[in-house]
Image (cartoon, rainbow, N blue to C red; front, side):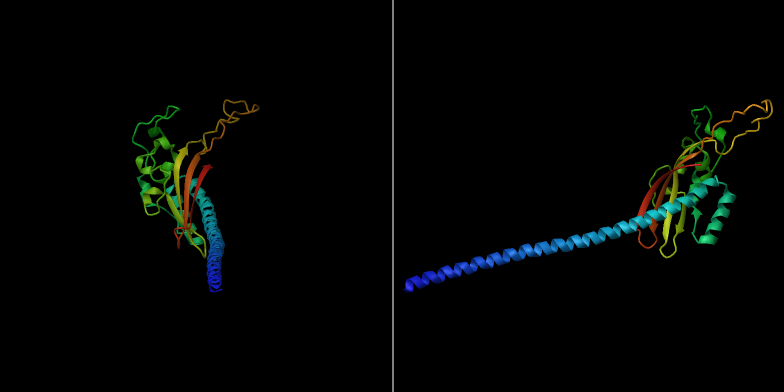
Length: 237
C-alpha cells in the first residue's frame, strides 16, 4: 500500500507541473495579443496624426503657390515686386520677401543660340527673379540655381519666401526651376485689320503661346519643421 501511495503522489505532482506550463503558455499568448492590439491602436493614432500634419502642410503649400503666381505676373519688375511685398505684409502679415541671393541670377554670358536662331544677348539683360521670369532656362547664369532641391537654411536654393496662416504659421519657399519662353508678354499687333490689310478681311494673328514655369514649392510649420510638404507646379502665364 505504501508503494502504491508513493506512485500516486508522483503522478499527481507531474499533473500539476503540466498545468503550470499550460497556464504560462496561455498567459504569454494573451499578453502577446494584448500587446499587438495596443500597438495597432497606437500606430493607427500616430499614422492619423502624421497624415493630418502632412495634409495641413500640403494645403499651406497649395495656398502659397497662389502667392507665387502673383510674383510671376509682375515679370520681375523691381518696383512692382516691392510694392506687392509691402502690400502683402501690411494686409496679411505674410513676411514676404524675394531673397537677396537671387540677384546673382543674370542673363548668361555664354553666346547661347536658341532653336529659333536668336542668342541670349538679343533677349536683353536681366538680373534676379526677372532673369528667371523673362528668359528661357538655356539663358540662365549659374547663379540662377535650377536644381529642384530647396534648403530652407540656404537662401541660394530658393527665390521667394513668405509666411501664411494665423494660429499656426507655415513658411513657404518657392523656386522657379525651368522656364519655357512664350509670347504672352504681348507682340506688336498693330497691323491686325489695318495698314496694308483690307479691313473687310479677317486679320491673321499669331497664336498666343504662354510662358511655362516649372515651380517647386516647399512648406513647413514654423513651430515644427517635421510638418512639411513639397508641391511641384507647372504654371502657364
